[in-house]
Length: 383
Image: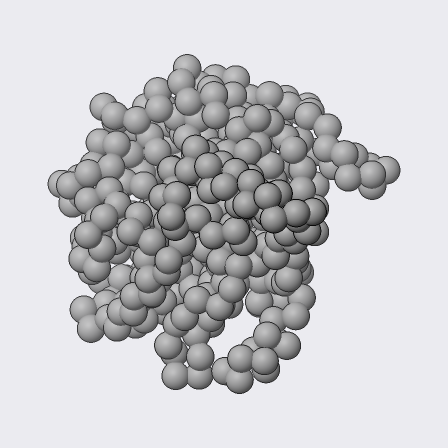
């Protein structure tokens, strides 16, 4: 389990998104622009910047690339959203009517890509869809459900249910059924009988900000993270949901990803992906950090003491860590050297288990990871 490749694509990256064949990646470079890079055709691991999307007036805070329709959606602190379509050799933007009075924070295409969700600082979620008659994108708002900023959104595989996290410490699940956009026969379970914006469940497990919510591949479970160095797993999402809480001693996580029904990777302020696995009884636990850093041998006792002290100072200065809590194994020098803010799956065709994924962070890197020996890990852990 190791990083396959690391690409320095800027000084700071807040989020990224891939096209369908993984030949191009779009990154938000912590400003009002979106840069699109393409892998060099000669296979020398060099990425060339081929497009710059310039339409937003303020920081671009979210991006998603639809793999079916090849459309890019972006949101920004300027309260606007654009859907970008490739026409010839140029990406052309279409304005989305969000009707927000606060910043747009995050965005995600639905599985069918006939709508997308935008979380905002206005305590609301915009569900956006295309109106063919008027040739524009409009939105319906889920209001008065959140008490603070919506930090993350995640779609259920049925294209109707939407999970959200917020800085009010809660995770919620809503129905986003829109007549004329969704069909009743496409829904599974009670979501088909629910009205737009109806809340299915509210999870009050965290006493801190919550981030990075994701559904499992089957849609039966949810994982989300809290700013109190805790990850939450919810099975059988609904009125009788079963919840598990896993606390760890490291720094908080910012995002999470299901590799399979029993394997989850979390990323955040420790700059090192964390692996969580459920055993045969469904009990989740932290297993290991994926980025195994090698410490350089000290030439003397003084050198060892100096290196340890400098590592503690570095961790406190860059990541807000407590000096006494920084461990030598988490010293800088891994694949990422600053907070990891985004993790995305890079599935192989025909495989249900995700063995490859990418991360981006505030160090300006996009790192590709490969987990090819999950079966061996399961056997070692006897789970």
